[in-house]
Image (cartoon, rainbow over all chains, first blue to last red):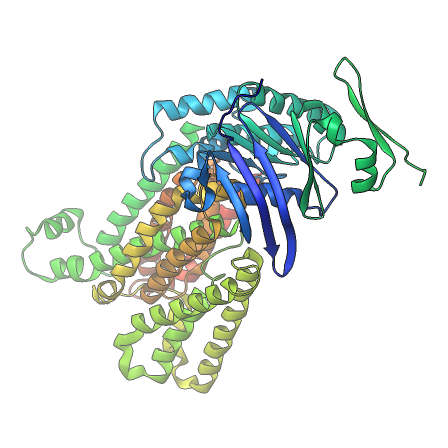
Length: 264
Length: 328
């Protein structure tokens, strides 16, 4: 049964031009609470730009972005920081900063300019550390962590923002299979907790396995959106990625991509 | 960890207090501590000792403290804002510009020596403005790489202009050498009176930038996610550093080394690069090191004054190298 609620995020007819190159023209994206939306598409299709522009990290040329009904242009930076958190593909890894320090920085949209963090802020930081599974190495310095651990710290920083939406730009791009699965479960779990999660992903099997909806971006526009099995069928894979491939899922929730690697 | 950080603060604070006492009491004439206290409280009899303390040593001590703190804070802000360990006031052109401004007054207009601090300050700020104007132009405004390259180019330009002046007025070079080497003078409060507003503005900006710089440390994307505009923060940090470094140069010549090394020493010794720690402790340590260096420079071969710049390098480099060797 569909319940008419206001979406957390609505992106309509979004256009972005960088320099003189049009990157997006007609991108769409909708996100509701408790939903995990995967944005997929070939390299250079504009997936990251779509998510960055929706998050307010990238200047828009035209189109609308609404956060809980409010036009993004009317939101102040600090307000926006409480509505969405953005996890980059690879954050900077400064020396001399511990995991806990970094997560506390993530709390800053809730702390006034010269005020000290309150007990509630520290509690939010601890909760973020706990939820993202970084408690075991919370005192360690960032450069001593593995890629998978660092990515979980990035998610912890975002969770400390306590925004209803978390947007992650290819968070598993550099991770091994085990670390990817940890991140996948974490993101799915956050959506189950009630957060809206947007995930930019290259791995279609991962997207199909954890996303409620998949948005396919190709050549700067949204070409399809819906449940993975409706959207990521063989014809679409051939059309958008120019490969002969098929998505396979079984009843255990296993998902994989069957690719005709060497056949044209 | 907290113990280690507190220890660093305690050492820096003790060094600053000891250096302050030494600076006020020691010199060509030694003034007993009791007389210094009397002079400061206004209880002293009018006489040469009171004059020495209030008119010579107090302004010099105060100058060393604000210059040392200013340069160290400028370095900490720039290293944080540019995410570059090599950043110092030299990088944004301030040092080169201030050197040229001072050389211009000392060599070309020696009769207007009173304008020395103004010249150094003005050209230091002009050079920094030029660097930022270049860095903020073009398709990717505010890029770190472009800012650093613009800084190197503008510094080279002013450096060449200074060298040209030195060769054009060889008979007056002696007067400029002291400024270029860096060192404090016993000119009373005149310079401080000119530049204190710039120091104040720089320090206030620095305090406001502490939190935003911590966000920037996690990368531009995370900073933006947290509601910070990276370019604004970089520009603000650059402005604050330019104000502090130009004001420092107009009092004490070119002591750029301090701005480069002190924040590193603080990070390595304290084991953290949180700006809430690095900025204030750098201020404390920079003030302590410059004041100690200046007092040594005045007293080792009194009444001859050694230039404090080279002396401080001699003091600071071994400490820096020791800490660097143990760094991860």
